Length: 351
Image (cartoon, rainbow, N blue to C red):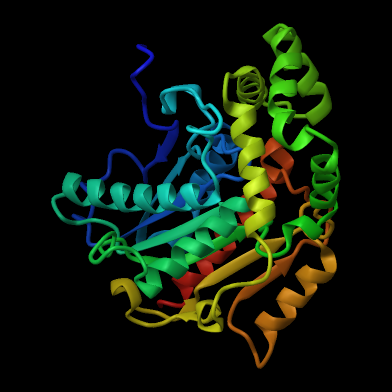
């Protein structure tokens, strides 16, 4: 690949059962679940989770009236081939949180438009934004901007965003979380805030990739070879670690006080997005002990949503699901089952 050429971020597209009639010809509704990664934003981390969710949806009797496609894409900047020229300071720095939000919104609009064209206009009736960690923040902000029509006139209005599924979300005060506090302390070390990515790249550059794979497999505990290879490739990449650090710093500076109006957390009203059946707009799964979430601030957020019989569906895991649920099969299967329950609740409400 020439230095000036780029390719889109890596993506995964899991369609409904193959071998069935063309989209919409069987009279069933169509829906898209658009998945947004956390940080580091590599879709490879979530392939097992999305594949298992695909299987659960296909085997669910409650989901028989709707064709659901799943799409997920890496965040921009995490693959050296998705940008050119290479990142450099100060003229061509990595993508910050605002840039990721805009990129995701544009991608959602593109996927919806492309599918409508491919299917002869019988596109998606509903779009569900599903995000993990900072991806949940991105999903919420995209939904907010979409409903408030804050983008240029007519831009992405054809995308019918109806629900948000937020998994281990970092929605407020991320710097107050245990890991956020540690990151802020590290940034306070002289020169570390500006040069940590260079130090990391220098250290990782002298370690063979096979050794990096062995190390991350032991440290992270992931048994899926795809995850280990993706993590090692990212650590050894030219710009990937810098992108993660830059985005993390942007998260610290942006994700503070809650900024959304209360009506965002209401019901996805009947008829919204061309659909019938009332259901909560947002479904949220928190971890019991999430190192990227301050428990007392999480509890305050939940209390605000539940005030006066609030309409957001919120669950707090009672077990030991980790923030990085996508790395181990037993964890991502449990989360996929929760997501299926949310989908079935939405579908049962249409009956």
